[in-house]
Length: 273
Image: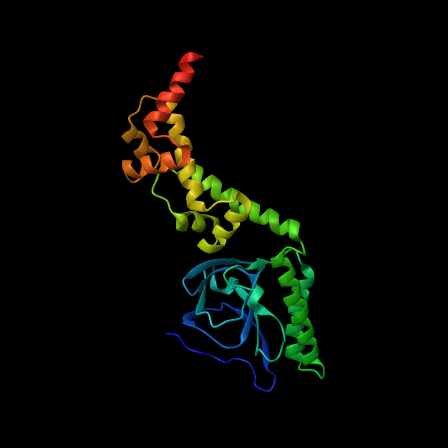
C-alpha cells in the first residue's frame, strides 16, 4: 500500500520525534522532508527497489517522494530513532545532494548529534524561540551532511570508509569467485546497495564490480592454464563461468588470446627458460 502522510503540526510546519521500537511496515511516501537519525540498534530500510542496512549513528534524508518502509532487525526496544520532519517551505535548501540509499554515519561528528538533540529539546519545550532554534539546527545539520557527502568535511575519513567497503568486496570476490555470485551478492555482503557499491568501485578501482569479477576469474584461469594440465572445460567450470563459450569470449576480450593460445605461448616460454 502506497499512501501519502503528513505528520507535522501545520502551525509549526515541522516536528521532532524520538521513537523506540519504531516500525513502519507499510510502504509509504510523503511530500515533506524527513531526516532520520538511528540512535541505537539496527534495521532494514527499503527505499523504492533498494534495501539498506542501518546501524547506530546512521543519518539520512528523504527529500523526494521515494516509497519506503523500515523495520528493526534487533530487539524492538533496542531500536531507537529520532525523526525530524518539515515542510519544504520551512527550510530553503538544495536537497539534490542527498540520497536516502546512502546514509552517512555521524558517530564521529558529536556536534551533529548535539544539534539533533537540541532540535528535539527545542521542539518539546515549545519555547518562544523554538522555531528559530530548530531551523538553525537543521541548517547546520543539512550543510554539514552535504559537506561530508561531498568530501569537503572529514573527507579523509569518508574516503577511508569507502576504500574499506571496496576492500571487503574484493575479498569476498577472491573467496567466492568460483561460485555463482553476482553484484547483489557482493553488495549484500558489504552491506551497501548495488548502485552505491558500483559507484565506490568506479571511484576506487576505475571499473565495475562485475568487470572486476570477470577479470579476476580470467586471472585465475591464466594460472591454471600454465600451472596445470586441466582441460579448458574443467578450468572454465572451476573459476565460475556458466559455460565454456562465455569463458572463451571473456578470456579473449581480456587477454587478446584464446585459452589454448595463452597456454601454448606461456608454456613455451617456461620451457625455453
